[in-house]
Amino acid sequence: MEILILLLKIIALTFVVVLPLVPISVYFERRFCAVIQDRVGPNRTGIPLTLFGFKKDFHFFGLIQPMADGVKLFLKEDFTPAHVRKAFYWLAPVLTVAPALITVCVIPFGSPISFGDYQVNLVIADIDIGPLFIFAVSSLTVYGITLAGWSSNSKYPLIGGIRSSAQMISYEISLGLSIIPVLLYFGELNLGKIVQQQADHGWLLLPLWQDGHLGLPDLQSALFWIPACIAFVIFTVSIFAETNRMPFDFPECETELVGGFHTEYSSMKFALFFMGEYAAMVIGSALVVTLFLGGWSIGFGLDPWIQGLHLGSFQFGGLIHLAAFVVKLLIFILFFILVRWTVPRFRYDQLMKLGWVIFFEAALINVFLAALILAAPHLTSAILAISAVLLVVVTAALIRVAKVSEAKPNILRV
Amino acid sequence: MPVVKLQRPKLNFGEKIYFGALLKGFFLTMTHAIKSLRGKSAGADSLASSGLGVTMQFPEQRWDEHLPDYYRGAPTLVTDEQGRERCVSCQLCEFICPPKAIRITPGEIPADDPWAKVEKRPEEFEIDMIRCIYCGMCEEVCPEQAIFLRKDYLITGHNRAAMVHDKKKLYEIGGVRTGLVNKWNELK
Image 1 (spheres, rainbow over the protein chains, first blue to last red):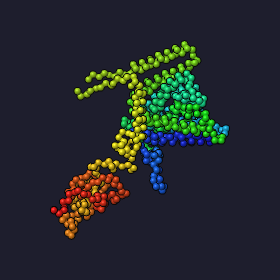
Image 2 (cartoon, rainbow over the protein chains, first blue to last red):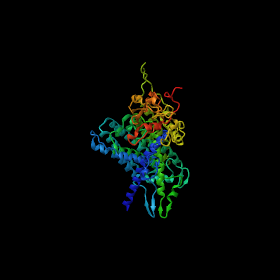
Image 3 (cartoon, each protein chain N blue to C red):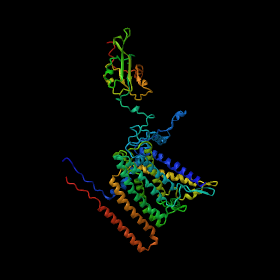
Image 4 (cartoon, rainbow over the protein chains, first blue to last red):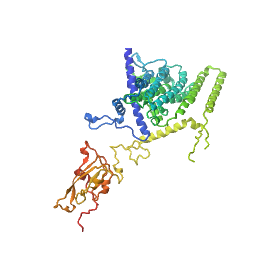
């Protein structure tokens, strides 16, 4: 019985909620970027109803377009060039998609639903090391891209693969470090419990309610809002860098590198890369929403009431929360798309400098700041003052060292 | 001085942080998106947009009203207001047509016809619309003002044979054209 429920959860949550979000985000990308650019985007790919005897085709607002893309990529000729290292060439796309989909299993999609007294958590694996698991598994994506670049045995993919792997490992540091204040605040790593705490005491970025009614937080939580915001910014930008998405998409930009690491790939393998990129984007958004924006919680004191809704003995509040989670996810994906079509690409050295010099130091300082704020009630005021001063001094020193060690531009005399 | 080397401009702190520029960028793209959704993009009315951006959604909206006067569509043969087919099968258009899309078989006007003095008219006149490049040279070179390019551009067919316009079809889409020089009329 347990196994059946687990299987049902895996199928429902991965293949019915997350995997369809990939073509939906492709559709939104094309439509939203078209609207930004004063165009229309795909709006005619419908189902040919005239083939079934109806009078007119219905265009479905172009929602069939991702399906048409999928069918096209499936039916394309799957060509393996002769000069590639076959084993790694075939392995690489799988290594890009699979980790992104595996990380779905620790994300809480909704509050628990219950049939009578049998409770079902809307998480596939309710483990106590949520974010750690996600970072560990998504690091495998680096392997996928590097192998793709290297096994293609060609200039442009190699450069794209190397750049991408360097970029991804650089930003994993700030990814992990920026999360630490959040974990310090909640005191645990179980994503389900983190979201439950946010539902009860206010989202991390919007702490406006307590225990079912609106109300402002106490001084400590209010002060903690500052390192939380810094953590949010660093984490979001690092997620952009991890998923190779603009403005960090140097490894796959078309203007410099033909196709980057996926130049030599065609049809289904290319489709897997494509899907892997969008799946990573969906998972990244899910993580940001879970940790900073309250996950499935609707907020403003409504959550306990929603959890109490029931039809007889079937409490279905969790499904409403699931819908809220998907809506938040879609809004964040739209934000990803907006950033892609607004911000020009960073130059590679600027990108590396941002990851190693600026975000690394900022995330470190943020950890100490958050620790200071959280430990403040337990420290004597003398130690508190000394620590605060020390923090300011160290920050200033870091900034000064970064500025001084910048390469001086040569004044050129003509 | 052939080469001028420029110094990078010094950025102040606000510009280096880049968040201000990012927010301005988001503002710009979002206002573009909202304007486009409301149908108020710049140039929407002059380009006859469909209400989303500046795109004219083709089969539902066409730009037939906005075609300029000099637009070159499909070539056609015309009859004049006296009911005479103006083409005399001189084959000048066939000679000048760059992709050789026109094929003419000249024929004789019989002696008992009211227009016998014209002496020639085409027996067969075919324009292969797949070859036609709509250049308008046939219209330019015709000494009889018989072939004109009209404004239709949607020439389609199910097979190659259907895309060849024969004489009947050409006169059908050409119609009657008034105001031409009727040089074969009797002198007053």
